[in-house]
Length: 606
Image (tube, rainbow, N blue to C red; front, side, top):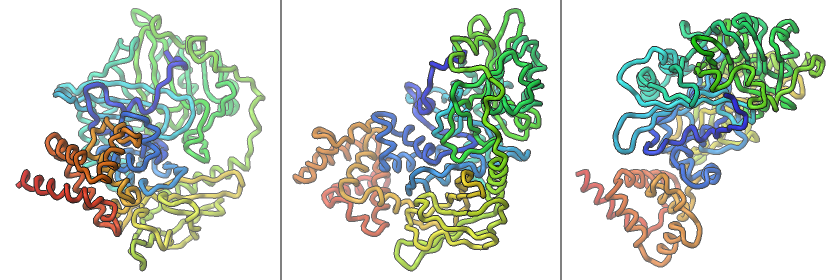
């Protein structure tokens, strides 16, 4: 059922199935690394070749985002965007894709999913792919669970899909800032279609249609039904939630969590379960719900959340409930958090049961029994500092900040101001801020009660962004955090995207590589090689020798087959022309050819 030797790669969830192309996607996550969101459109647009090479190449990322940023929306808990390890001007392009949200119940927004629409190449119904995860959109190394479901959009609503549809429908209404009409329409469109999907289920779990639960949305929560046996996997647990789970079963056979969680629980609660276990030599860290970590990308150990129940009808059945909800009081009892769970059912003799989970074919070889007294002593000062840090994070995230950009005295330089009163932050000895498009070396110290704080007096147009990093340091030398807020920004330079483009295309060679990217098939990225026989090398040779045939052939082929691509070439040339020195990177011999195709495009649309 849960075999640790069966691994899945995150990006495989985003890869279109045969005969389909990517259309649009929604993601939800508690915490997010902007670098990971930056890679999503790269993977979707440029599947072939060495994905790692594409991720390192800003040119691929730029074009992928230009093509796909209006098709992907990521909803993330306010104040839980992590500061990326490296600065790049491309991060500003993530502003419209990133929507910060909150839970109206005083908890946190905690569901983790991808909902992706694929369209068939040769006609037919759209395919929806739903990926329900226990991991966030971060580069952590923890043990997680993923369930991938696919189905075509049918003609009638299905009742079991309604909770999921309601979660998707309400996403724009949970946003802390106004969501544009296009993003709101996207959520509504997905919600309508999700209601009508008949999901294909994993082998062995095809006895019943999947059932969805959304704790935190009234009427859509989850309560465990009576069972013969039960096992719980959750890195963080609350005593009351565990008691409720245990009372629902005749035999609570296993509790798998972290050693720290087991040590914090009352022994009477732990002893209700036949086996109390944790991962062998694995450090458990929180995803933010209860105990914060310095970075959203440093998580290791157990992060999966699953509840396994054995029930009896005319045969024995195993119910697997998995998703984002920890076995905590906030998630399962008070339902302060917004969570997502899915339940699938299979015959026990086919998929295994609760005890098999801790056996040799399950997680058994990675688990060790909990021994009281093996845990580290609690550092009360550190805990107090962490509470101060989280309170300060929430206070800053709730402040009514805005970024204002004005043109500076030097051409191409701008002044960024953080507008809004800096609140008093108890227990915090230092607060700094800077745009994530530049390094932390440019951070400024924020002064309490200041109304307007200058973030930068000379930021280039390409680096102007409303994605602002904050750093908090506490009285404890080892406790602090960095996070990003996606703040409203006023006065963005009209040529910001063109300026970003020029930082990537800064010579004729770069222009030709980008041109090949525009003209080439999205799946043909390997043709842009620098090798002796690569198309790019041939183009350079042809231009140097005065031979225009390769350019003429490529442009003519594109004009005949996909003329819309030439509109992208026109946009590229116009963007470069709008920046100082941009025209110099466009080869003169290419412009001679391009004038012919400009006339052809005008005649075609005339």
